Image (tube, rainbow, N blue to C red; front, side, top):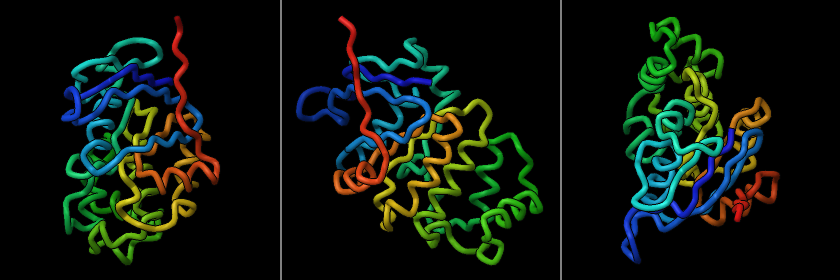
Length: 208
């Protein structure tokens, strides 16, 4: 799957919440997009996922302008205030909530199965924010990937959790190796580190 943004923007001029942005995200790779602050990454993720219509420009999925397909096939992961677990919510409750989006059962034993898979049974009552960045990112991206029809994962501002990008990039690369389109929207220092260890910068090839 290929997602293409052509001068997609929210707002206009210097007050634009998202300046005109052009990029191309391809399946089978982890692409890194440099964004600033906490607001622009969220707006960009919502535009990429078809959940917000750009003021100008266009977003294409496999060359077609189809927001419904984007909403079905693209998952926004851990976006501040949008797709992140609520503050102080326990791992048990967060996993149960995410399982409802996957169409799987979210009974106690189902949640415990997930906790066991990630070696987190002894931390079921701990808040999600207590997780190490690499474990948080791995867990939330996997849960998002379990949703029916999802083929793309947009990970938003992971740098806010701290940690070493080299520790959590492998979890994202594993999804790319299975054919997913993966994008990380992050700050410049984190982007530089990710690019140095194997992630890629998105490209855009315009046709005349």
